[in-house]
Image 1: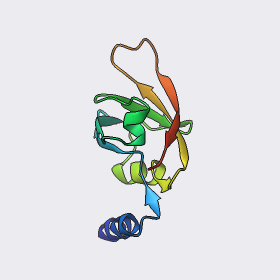
Image 2: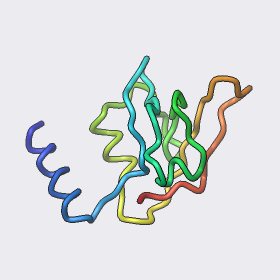
Image 3: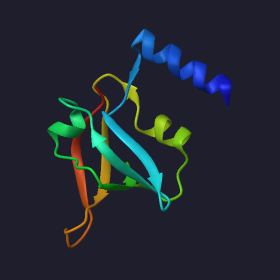
Image 4: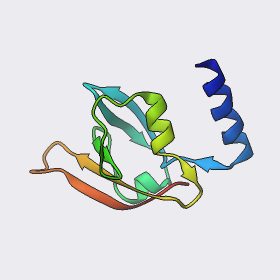
Length: 102
């Protein structure tokens, strides 16, 4: 576990891999947006606090681990990812398709 942490830190400082720009936690088994990072791809596409990411690139994200989130929502700068969002007040989940890594 500690080895993965150091690999992630090295990648961050080398700038090879980037994320979509969210602070998140796993709540009730789902990736839950705590807040989008200002001026990040997530903020630009309109992700909001409380949004639940229920799938990533068509794969179910229920009961995903934090390490799996880092693996699936990070990539080389400009990599596109499709997330399906469940939002309070929305009748049904919706896809966000224009989401790039930083």
